[in-house]
Length: 249
Image 1 (cartoon, one colour):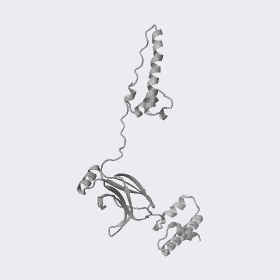
Image 2 (cartoon, helix red, strand yellow):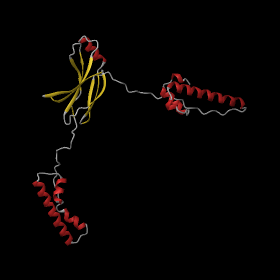
Image 3 (cartoon, one colour):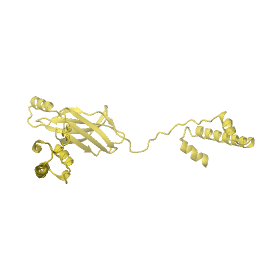
Image 4 (spheres, one colour):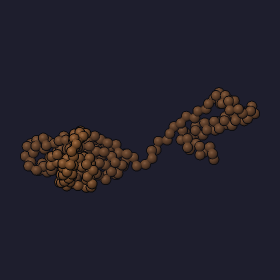
């Protein structure tokens, strides 16, 4: 086999098939060397056997032809103008960006700039009130973590370039993202208290209670229903947990 022409992944699969020890820790050259040595050892061990056999050798089973799997590595970049901001938590943001070669060449030609400087910015606010939170010098593609404490604010990021005079020119901007809150919501759940109405008597009857027990249970159910209705109305729609606490006091 032509081991030198194989990739490291292909060599590893062959080594795995031949049960080569310590294969996972070997470099490509070490895998080539180990497989070549294994191939020579197998060839030499077969030679004496062939010479001593007087009867016809049985046909060897056909070995499956090794077909290397196609690899589709993820590229470092796609050569497309891109910038994306993703919130990690209320005080951390992740941004990745890329500026295409075509955009860089056009920028250098338009502003007569040989070595442009790439600037990554983060903004917060709405259309009528915008503030710049961060500005860092970066490469034309990459990723960055910002530690900006902005719970509940709307953030976005820009990637741009500086010309030879130091003037900033925006290239691409991300979508505006609403950052997560850093505390429990102030909204209180609104619930409508419901009773089973006429069905309550059927339920008690099916449960097997006596008429006297049923009357006592119905009286208790009506009393608790009216109590919770009054509490709910008086407190202006409080949550169930609050009403339960008040009912038990």
